[in-house]
Length: 529
Image 1 (cartoon, rainbow, N blue to C red):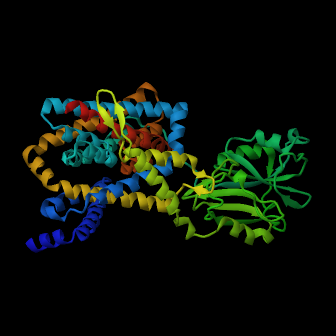
Image 2 (tube, rainbow, N blue to C red):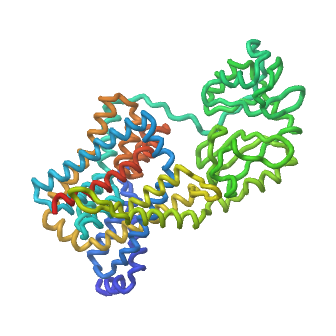
Image 3 (cartoon, one colour):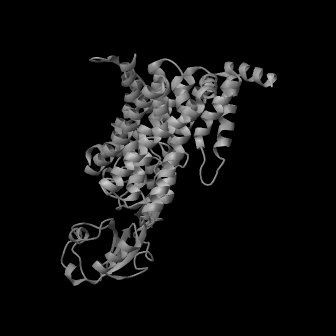
């Protein structure tokens, strides 16, 4: 054992990546549907740090990792975050989450007073109950010691398992009726116009009466397929190609328009044919579909956009992202120029601009270093949360002139997970010895206190969401996942409620609550010094 210890201490980078590998192996262990996931890296790191104290890598490794995590999250969720701040539904959801987060903070301070905890341990319990590594980093930076890491590591398991248990109990007690989303793909149907009420009206007027989420993407008249022009006057026997997100919407559109006419459009590809390309060229990414100037003399109709595993009905205001697969109706002669126009490179969908990331993160570090005078507290800087703030703004803007701020989803996930893993490994290894000493002295007490802080976080959200505001279960599950922050909670919410509401709620809540948690541990310790 002494040989292994010496080897780890002589090769800190080897120790770091070995810790990460073992952590992920442990994180994949599944016990009745529960697993620690990436959080297991922290516990393995604590053990390695205790076993080989001199194997700890430089603190800059953890700082870099967390900065990458924050930037990737902010850029991806910027649009949803600002939507949540401005929409009534988003404001209600953020208010509910805020009540839970502040309740957890208040309970952690109360426990500090009644149980004799240090301020560092209390802030760590608060950060761990919300599984917020950025909050942990902010608490460590504010207090200048590793006490928060000890509290964090004790309460983190409750922060992951507790919300899942609460969501499961609420689901079993309430038994909400949740219909699984049917959007496995887009539904298409050719319809011949037989509704006489539409004859003589413009196609734009007819489209205005279609159900939500339904669009007409092609028109056939006089044996020729053509793009749908809003000014086209509808006549008997016109055939339209209808696209929708569900079979129910397609059926409503058919009843509204006329009769199904399968094959009338698709069998004739002399005028319009189907082509699908990857959006990988920087000139088109970050722009709306309505702003694109397609090459060629013939008209081009965007009929479908696939983003990740989701199919999206195209709208003129839909902003394209790296990796989107764009399905179009166009003349065959224009296929080559369209592929060149979009880039059509699967390799390009995993690449991103190092210039935009460099500028964005540099600006975030600069803003985070600015010290603002707070009466009664002193000067306060937001530290690494400045990176998150800048990333949220850039994620909302998406593009500034020729600079595209977005990151392809695949690359974003890699950066985010790598950054989070590096931070957990470094901070765990550095706090291993102190963690072992603390747990051996009052471990059971700390575990119980961590559970109490978690209850204070989740229970108010469930009560307010389900019983006071009477919101749908899947929407409340998204708020819980966003307030607690751990992706494992979101994944479990999606299992219980297979709709898009948990994802939307998580996106609206997570960035804002992360900032609130960071500010809490930045400001509160000043009152206890």
